[in-house]
Image (cartoon, rainbow, N blue to C red):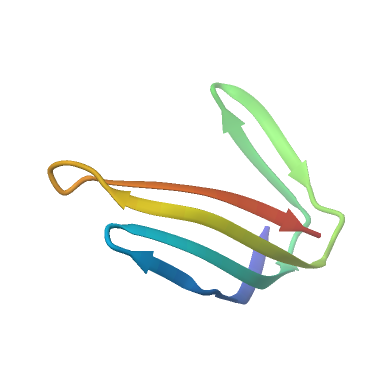
Length: 84
């Protein structure tokens, strides 16, 4: 299976001292170019996936925050929502 995908994402970011709150909205598309079925092995078990949608467009929304912790370690939490 071969596919082409692309899209755009953008959104505002608010920062106050060490806390950053962000949102991202996007529109993405995927188009199957060759084949509809992918065959693979997962944990020794043969599997296959058949895609019946040749072209799909969907929207995403992400809401989250980032806060620095100790020793150059950042905590990033977010929620991703797919809208088909």
